[in-house]
Image (tube, one colour):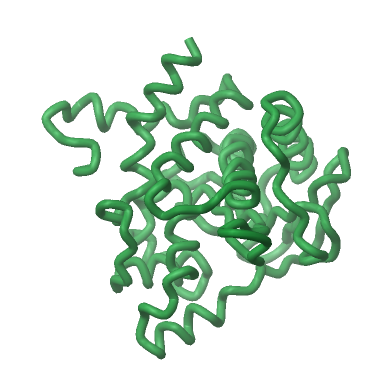
Length: 261
């Protein structure tokens, strides 16, 4: 059954996550620039339409960072102003001691689900993806975030589910990283709500951290990164099935090629 599910994920995840990247080539368009600034909090909710078709911001965020010189000087300056890590009011160490969850209790980024459940969930992700499946863990970040634990930031990034952001180059096209997930998952755009949405996002995004920290990153392989990260949602949290939400889009349009969505 899981083989069949993996094949379905292969078919259905590719164009969803690679939206706005024709032929997997980055285009420094105004829409991508605005989407980046919206995700980073420099633009308000009135710009949500620029990211409403994205679930994971992995490709968008990192493509802009890696291609920053393709933008005009004024846009480049604006992008550089938000390339640092987020800041938060508090943090919690996961029970295993491997992860540090940064969060707010007041303000626009205040977390609206249990941070302890997030901590337990990310340990479960590690246990399955690293200890059970045998993937190498995401590399240490040389003390960024306060120590060498892997850092997860809970922020208001609706309607996005989450993203994993490159940080320091540690080898041939390999990077340290940190993760950002939404603080509520309560808005209409989320098929799965609250802590369950956070759980599948953790499984998805941590696999991106494994990918870019241990294997060569290539723009043309983004479809495969998203395929495998989406499969981790199913493998780690089998009962949640968030990705079911976008399967009908493809079944209902058999006349349309995958890259046309």
